[in-house]
Image 1 (cartoon, rainbow, N blue to C red):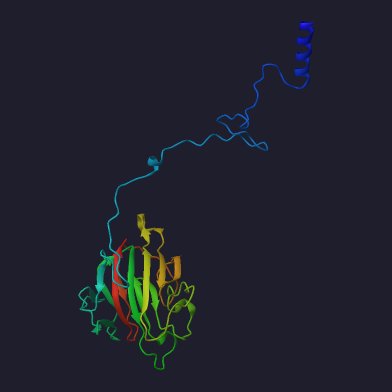
Image 2: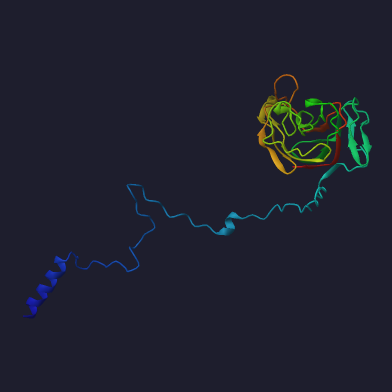
Length: 271
């Protein structure tokens, strides 16, 4: 009788689909291996290689500590180009002394004396300056408060009265002159100081003076981005089309365009 009972039990287990000596699945879910099971015919994915957090961290070189300027004051590593006292950092294009005027700590263009340029040369840089347009009188368009910021003496960020002063948009305030109109007109009103913060990546030239990478600029006017990483097509001529000519570091220049535009708080950082 005992032998007959054992045969009945064994037969019942097989009939229920269980194979003898087959391990049962754990209650926590199916057992896994180092290879993820393929889904929808995809190839198995290998387990991601394990790395320590420290292997993707570095500690040198340590960036220099720079004290930010309060409000419009320059940071501690800035080169002060005009602080309201004199023009010792500037000269004229012909090598003579700059002939613009310093009045009430403002640098004021003396029309007809020509553009001025820094004695120091620059490449990649961060530039801060403030400008104020003169009274509009009866002038309109390009004749109202016209000047220009000539990065590396070749690439112009337009300075112009933008207070109800229609003109061609790639020549208005905030434009890359004759190349790119500003995204918005961020000029406030005539007689108020306008604040420019400019981030400049200089063009690079290689063998046989071939252009390797073009210039790029971000322009912020009164806290508003008006040019966002714009890639320049070349220089910014009044007549003709932009083109690149090989050069290295060059002076920053401010343009005399016949109006008594005023500047203050001019500083620059090499990048």
